Image (cartoon, rainbow over all chains, first blue to last red; front, side, top):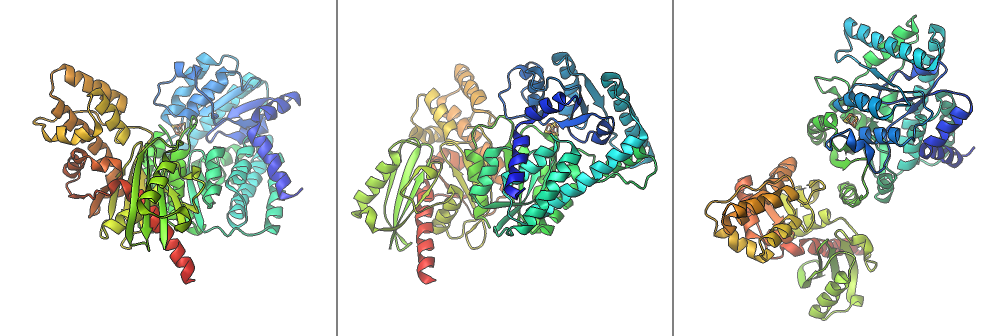
Length: 370
Length: 262
Ligand code: SF4
């Protein structure tokens, strides 16, 4: 396939998750909905298909009954989609309580979406010490027992070992894609489609396609755009926004986006004999993330370093409205960028954005700074 | 060389013709919402005033909210860059530009060469914008141009919320119901805009000299309240509302000049 054909296929998947869900169900598979840093390896190893839920750009109606107005629209739209039947057929939803909004989705979900069981899980704040690792492991064991009870599937260490390997391979391919997309001609929408589609496909299927894509891209022209940026935020998937990146000649040189590169930073160390311990180690070694306790705000240095490494001269923070963890991080990010001589801009985004005029003005002015 | 800058804002259309990037030949301001014939009227008026024709313009640059809709433009650039260029032209040693327009507020930070180095825009709320003043003036049955005069008469400025236009509206009504005098309410309204905009200025950093551009700059009440809030003098020029169009016209000149020199 040509790169255009692969991009088209991934675009199709990224924009039609419902079709993917129905296809997996028609193939006799059970689908489990996952989100921020869920142990997808475990779900996959039990023969289930993990599919990402990150809400959608839809009108919120029924979810408003359960949430106050001042809560991020990602959470609200996930509940809305649950209530309106979009996820029908899925066996369960697993959500770790990594922020205040994620903490309160469970109670509302259980009440409003009766046909899809909710599996809660908690991660420790202090994930590095031994007790943090034990806590993480206990959380994973809870997910396993809930999944076994709900789906009838069984867990085995041997299968987890295989899945860990499959996910590690996918992580490596996604990391390589991010580097290749930084160097070669790839539009913001195409880049986003590769990351988004990963949430709706089995990793082994996605790895095959992205591997081929990488080879094709390397045969193509290198990107010569002058305005290179690192994009940071929870999501960067709104097509209208990505279109503006093209319009103003802004190249995404790298990202620190939650549903994009942040997912692929760490692998399960396969040298650890017990695959569950390996998976625990993966989570506990993760850093530089809004949702993971980071008293020293090391994430700020990470953003600056990655921007410089990828020859980006600017940082675009896409601030999800009412996302308090991201808002807390913004001030040190802004200061660090200024100190490092990086241009930066903060653009507020949410799932109900209908007017992109203000974002357009900000991006246009931002591109004029270079 | 003549260049034309057109600034199509949310509530007014502005046009400026410059000669050799130095002298303002003519300017025009038409009150009209974006998407209407306002821009055409502004261009017709500025051409009439100058005695020039469109064909005499070496380049035309459009800016402002409606910049994409003006087909006669050779280039389009953001109003932020234009206000920076325009403000630097009028006040060569300005480093912070506060531009409050009809529906948004922007703060620009300029480097030593007068180039835009950083900026912040208000979030999606009318508080701290010209729209806020429109709403308040209509509740008080005053003209926008009367606000300055009224604010100057205040003895005990009222406290008005700067968080939300809708909340502020009901606050104004209850202040009036409680017998607070109109000048005190107006002064409170100006302070409310100032405190909202001041937080935006602080996000970028207050670097002297500071100037104000955009339609709201004409309101001395807001300017004064902002000076108090920020603790620095704020420069003002009666071309404040034209600053975007002026910047666009200058941009056109610089662009053409560069072309001719290469
Ligand atoms: S991290 Fe932010 S965007 Fe994500 S669920 Fe929590 S509040 Fe919402």
